[in-house]
Length: 334
Ligand SMILES: O=C(O)c1ccc[n+]([C@@H]2O[C@H](COP(=O)([O-])O)[C@@H](O)[C@H]2O)c1
Ligand SMILES: Cc1cc2nc[nH]c2cc1C
Image 1 (cartoon, rainbow, N blue to C red):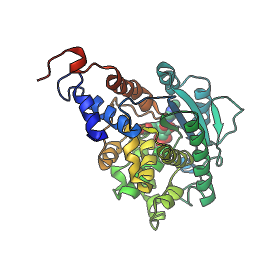
Image 2: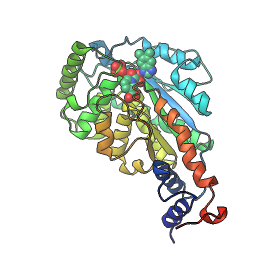
Image 3: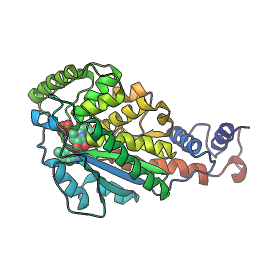
Image 4: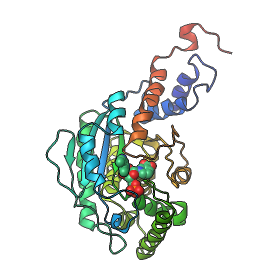
């Protein structure tokens, strides 16, 4: 019997009707396979929130002003945001990364500075970032994930904060999946009908400006954001270290999409935690052929979907490790 067969048998011989633990069985199988262990472990869960500002925000593509990005970073550091609450509840180590916010922050134990610049350039006029800035994003994220992996973390979730970043995510999705921008663009923080029409028109203009680009990295450079680039690199590095990768909502999924185009095998280690209400996320997940754990109509970001799905992932690992088998519990199997 090979490893996969032994694993499936272990799941099937638990005291339950065949397949009765549904998606928990799929998650347990995936995690055991990643770790090549019939007794997998979730150790030192981390959640990293990458924050950055976007030059395109000047075009009025968000319902909120750009200052909200640094203000929310302070909120994260003071423990007042949704992600703080859910990480505390589930004992997940939370760190905030300044990937390129348009403000300076005093040192804080939960804050890592990987500041690329004070926000990206306006991609309607030029590429969002230079090649050097993209390289910096990759170097910083790789070093950071390496340190977390070496400390013994086996499961890592990613979140983001950045006014304007649904625009970058929609552009990457449209360009990488070759879909009309209308199928990839939602209301983000909640733009009204007039702003939504304008957002779509501006994003179409950005696509037309950068339509000569072919490689995923060139698209990321032209239409991404510093937080999206660092998350993409962090996910690729987490995969290299065989970590379990928790993917949050629309923006994190767009970062994953870039990573997937660079290394499709990454999907083996990814758990999609939540289907966001942001228009386009459902299509993106369908295109990847994945099915998320939760659908709670959230459209917040911050990694909240990961933190909320974490206890379900724990339950999947725990049933595999702790539940009795038909034989050990003396229960008749058909
Ligand atoms: O994660 C999601 O699915 C999601 C969907 C809509 C909005 N957001 C959050 O809202 C911000 C981006 O929205 P916007 O309208 O400024 O592009 C950013 O801080 C995200 O974390 C997040
Ligand atoms: C208040 C606020 C909190 C957020 N958290 C993630 N994105 C956000 C956007 C806004 C506007």
